[in-house]
Image (cartoon, rainbow, N blue to C red; front, top):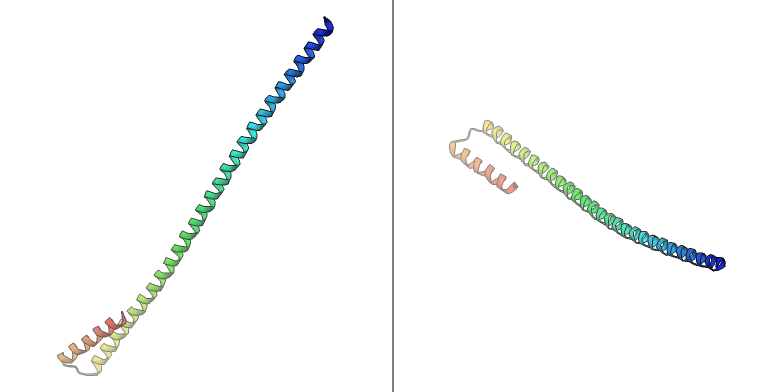
Length: 120
């Protein structure tokens, strides 16, 4: 009976080892699957991050263009204001040099208004 018992014990031990090995492999497989899923999630987040960074760059570029346009408009406005000031100064100078009647003054104002309308 001792030998039979010993053989039976070895068989049970081998079965136990096989069972433990199977459980270990299942655990490893589950962990590998979780790692693959996490990597997919990380890749997805990286894609989202890349998309958001591109969107941010696009917005920055849009704001930069708008600022450049505003600067150009501001420069045009300043140029127009200088032009108006020059016209006023020229008109005042001309009015001092010549003695205009009220009708001449009205005509000159109309010419100035037309010049401004043409400029803008």
